[in-house]
Each structure stands twice: as structure tokens, then as C-alpha cells.
Length: 291
Image 1 (cartoon, rainbow, N blue to C red):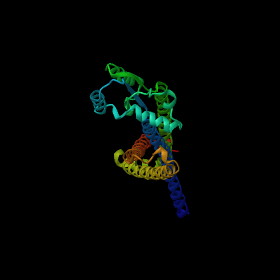
Image 2: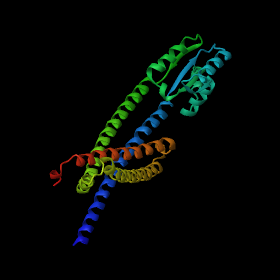
Image 3: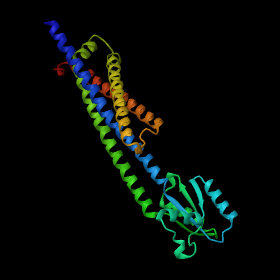
Image 4: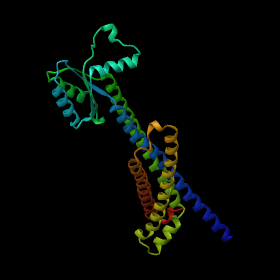
């Protein structure tokens, strides 16, 4: 009879441990995916932003030394990723290749302008910054005009902010769900040991001494759940990256490493807090309220 009861208790304990690990692993897995999406959303948006071209059109009478000075000053600027000079002849050759016919034969002369094209670093691709650069360039008497796609810049910045906001909201919701689920699982696991806790307390064991094995045990479960979540994240990201390499999900290993460390930290922190609160509840509970 005693042996059967012990086996039942053991199965119940294993079941509660399994429930805790699964809850932690599942929720941390979802948090990890959302974290990677949030970081890579910025990375991908930065890639698109840095492809936006600001074109400075130059007067035909501009001197080579003036053009070189402007190009060099732009190249050395903190906000410029790269700059390149495009002559009017090179621009004409490009249009001929693009459209398959020589428009110069019809016009009789080359109406295009020498220009400097610059790509800004992603953090500077805003309408305010681009307008400021444009105004500064237009102050030079050999600059005829400065253009960029204003609608595209406004649309990108608006969509990136909206997407980042929604991902942050979803991350917050899942974090709350993680705390609730993990806390509930740990409370159930501690509940099954409530009589042991009270017995130890009655024979003189301190609260810290009673809490210690529960905390370390559940931290171990939290670490195990986090490791399973990290492994699941790694496998999923590998296959997504293999199927959609243009997303470049694996291009920042240090960022992925940070996300995985955060997942591990969350797993440890939540289990520690939840176990501390759960054991404290039963330590403060009167004996007649245990049943």
C-alpha cells in the first residue's frame, strides 16, 4: 500500500515538474521568436532605409575641384553611408541601357545633369534630416537641385513605427502571460509539498532554509525550460533563414546571442520570484488552512 502511494506521489511530482518545464519552454519560445522579429524588423527596415538615394544635381558650369570638395565632405559626414559622383554621360548611358534606345538622337544634346548620389545611415533617413541636408547643399552656388523620394521615406518611417509598436505590445502581452502561466505551474508544484513545508516549519526550520531547495529546484526547471525554448528558437530560425534567406535572420549572431541570454535570464527570474512567493504563502498559512 505504502509503495503504491509513494509511486503515485512520485508520478504526481514528475507531472508537476513536467508541467512547469513545458509552460516555461512554450512561453519563452514565443517570447524569443517575438524578440528576434522585433530586432530583425529594425535590421530589415534599416537595410531599406539605407537604399534611399538623395541626389544632388550640379550646374554644368561647376568646377571639378568644387565637385570633389562637396563629395569628400559628404563622404566624411557622420550621416553618410556612401556617396558617388555620376557624370551626365554615365547617366545617359544608363538610360540607354535601361530603355533600350538612345534618346540623345531625338533630343540632339544631353539634357541630364552631373550629380552626386548619397545613401544615408538608417538613423538619419527622416524627412527632417533629409530636408536639412538638402537645404545645406542648395546653399552652394554650383548646386542646382536636391531630390529624394519624400513619399517613400514617410511611408517607411510610418510603417516601421507601427510595426515596432505592435510587436512591443504583443511582447508585453506574452510576457504577462508567461508570468501568469509559470507562476500558476510553480504554485501547483509547491502546493503538492505544502504539508512538507509546514512540517519542516513546525520542527523549527527557518523560512529561508525551507525556501532554499524549492527555489533552486525550480530555477533548475526554469533553466531547463529556457534551454528547450532556445533550442526550439534556433531550429525554427535556421529553417526560416534557409527558406527565406532575404530576411537575413542569422546575420547578427551577437544579437541572437543576446536574445537567448535574455530568455535564459527571464526563465531564471520568473521561477525564482514565483517560487519565493508560492513558498511564502504556505509558510504564512495556518495549519488548519492547508486542507
